[in-house]
Length: 377
Image 1 (cartoon, one colour):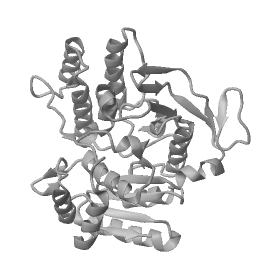
Image 2: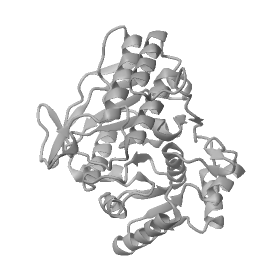
Image 3: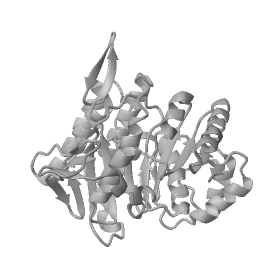
Image 4: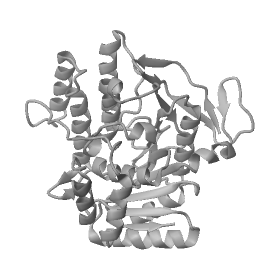
């Protein structure tokens, strides 16, 4: 694969954020003056250390089926479901069939499994619990996936969504993750994907939009925040809501996270706020890679969009790096879109790091007690 050579970057203390780099070609024999070359075989040693986490909640089972079949076989797949009972049973049967046909390792966990809640209580990790169960919310499900990855002792973790109408694009996403890791010069790296296009049905045609409604707004205010810190205008952030992203576990286990759909933007905020407190021996590198494949996902309705905008902007509003002028702009944006019900956005629930958690003890406890946790090797 050919990817643009790293462009200029912005440094904020120990955090280095690169401007987006495009995937030029999926297959290539040699680098060029403007692009680096990463043949698939050169990435295999990285892929073998990857866990790919797929959160799912009542998605089309056919899309989910195609999604897991699109992940490179070297990777370990972790599915974290928050689906209803009927959908959950279908997902489990599909996973068993997938493993029987491919032999690829795959783990299935259900977010609301009482055994998971009990095991987390036992190890004292309660920041994703409510009344003994893991809370509803995408972020909470992804934390379960991170704990499983920690137990597996994988070096890298990636996240991809299951509601992808072009699921074979996931194969490229995972290779893009590996390219970002390969380019990094530090054990603390993150790769955030920027979709080339986000097709949208308009009448009988597909309109190739560049930005989604949520990402356009989140990116704008993240860049305003950075501009206030730099003292000059920047537009470097283009992946504020990057659901498809990856990290080294050295970084992932040190971060705090935010609940629900603020999971991705809060990662950036937390690193900017707390980089000096993360016990890092080297700097953090954040790569933004523009995919060659477009991304088309399910339309989940207006309320879903509003919830994502609210939680994303709440993350920025309540950051200690945010000034009064920026907060006023956020309030105005939310009121103009008829999203804000109170005087200011509610604070996001913050989830503590997993660095010191006994992940192996957690998984062993779940295996003993759960009827729906599946580990197929």
